[in-house]
Picture 1: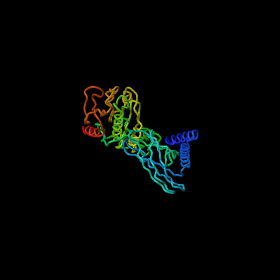
Picture 2: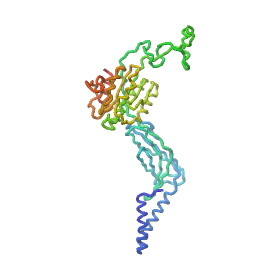
Picture 3: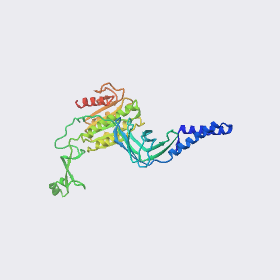
Picture 4: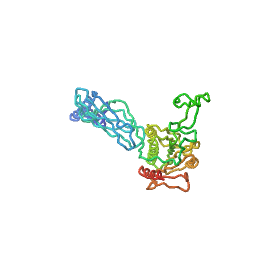
Length: 390
């Protein structure tokens, strides 16, 4: 049970008037003071009974792109025998409260409330617990009662539909020349010894009879493009938080385009690996979920993001996403770019060029790598299509 600021003021004023009126013999003041005290008491009694209500809240949808609409949907049912008035719902969403007034509820009736949830920033937004507030008609007292459990709204990066960059390398039609190619079912690569879990339909019986060891055919996917994505999350690399959010949107768009085509994606940052996918049907959703909770780091150099790429198996596409600020450590891209068939750098920020066109810079980090200047997702789409057509 809580008194509002008005309730506390009325209580204090009533006490002063009552005491002063009786002490100085002012009957009118004493009567006014008693009226104030009785009004506060009546407000407390009004809000004291807990309303008998059923409450069910859900989030629609539970996963949403940054800036897209999401709603809290609440169904209140009056399971008591009296009409309930003066109700208000307060739902905690992140670090703020969302309040909605409830119309009068007759016995046995239900009412659906919808209210917008904030989606301006990525991340896991805790929604709830839901609180039902009942106040008296004068707003002097209120009673709060929690309902239900908390829920989570996942705000993911915004994406735009991008084509997959061609890797620029033709693979041998009979199979790859490297044992590091992905296991698959498209082409025969070599014979190897059987291990537990191998498909018995791939047993090569002639070689098994000749060697006395159970041998199986190793089948591989010979033309599966890999995308390695380096996301610079350093705080000093971006002029503003909005620039970093745009960088994550760009990285998500590139990764989702590859995953949508069932191509493997390896996503890393200077803080360490973020996510690796192998080309399954749900990889796109997993990538968006993973990037929803990526935060800026206080590291000074981006070089550690490229350390593991020096031993890359070779081939595929390298995409580096960074800001227009500090470039410390980005020179490492020149050290690893030869391990890939194709490399591209996205320089993201509001200070980028007005049009997203690919340019080759003559000096600085990644001087031999095509660079796209991106100030919006629309510019990313235009520049990426231009880069894919080269």
